[in-house]
Image 1 (cartoon, rainbow, N blue to C red):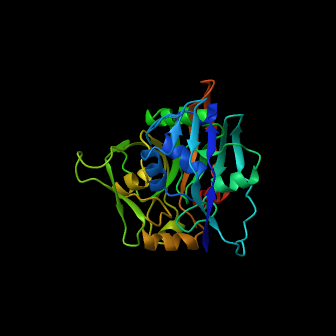
Image 2: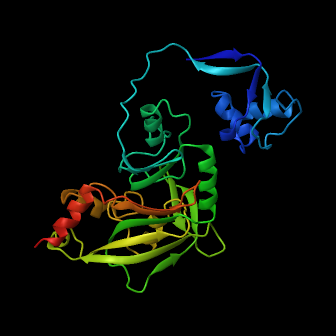
Length: 327
């Protein structure tokens, strides 16, 4: 059951870490449980004051600004039996300083809660570090993708990294195993992508029919190895290809859909792959999608120092490749 509690007039002073945000987005974080439409309405009606003046939802707040908030009813949960909170996971830390944290995310864990998932990576980190004043995802990885994931420990770092991502500056390099033969002549795929909703309500992406549709997407591909082991023949595969994929743009499911477009979908990909082959791969010990964010080349958001970070291929993927090397 949800109850409403009324919060009295508040005066909020903006600090350096909060500067640059849109007013409505800032208030969404301050007034949890209040719909965004209501926040925008009280701003529009002049009930919210920025430095004693009327303001707009799109205004950018700055250090030293004072925001006056009127009494607002905030949704609170009535007393019920609380759901058990899982113990926070320990993630492998690849890099950490006072403004940036980079972890090696395991496969099978979403980066944030939502859509039936209570606790993702960011919620786990916040629970494990209750003293941390600020932890925000810089970018995302699909639930079934493992590898390097950046978390900002200060808003200033988040802003800098988002700016770099908009200009495609971070170099993100992935390892993927394709089902079948990757063409020797294909070193890049530049095909725009269109988002749509699947039959079960899931988010899907497809290659656009022509270059004028969708979002531009560009991936570089390099063949690292080819495998033609008898264990593959036993499940109806003549070959698999280990591929290095480098993102030039960062669209949703980009590598997965670009590989599918070359008739070489990623092994274990339940959304864009081969359902029957994936079931057979389970029997020979590949029980996840073979996609791993292996390298990240970025400039540090504060010092500008080049960072070349690497996350080793997870043990289960190494073991799968090892059996393809044996006689």
